[in-house]
Length: 145
Image (cartoon, rainbow, N blue to C red):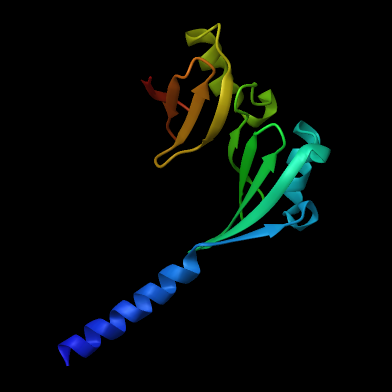
């Protein structure tokens, strides 16, 4: 009886796990309206290479890749999750003013190339390869190199 229950439980777990990772290629028009607006305002929408929708356990996530390698990830509602511009600066308006001020004060020769949510707050990567950790109130909590 115990073995039958364990086998059934494993089968259910495997089927749920197999369904959880489902990336689907979508068109730009299928992105949530706030995500489309962000891209049109701060990036070149004509430069979009492809868009995908990833069904997560508790919602959706949208990924947009540009021809130059930059990538943006949006939450299911279209709010920004992460932007990675690779070698160029993230548009200022996508990074909170308080974070930009802290970066400029502490690292005047550097600029932010990646900005987004982290496990416990926010993370910024600078062009000098330093990673800055921020809490939910955008206070700098640490630096990784």
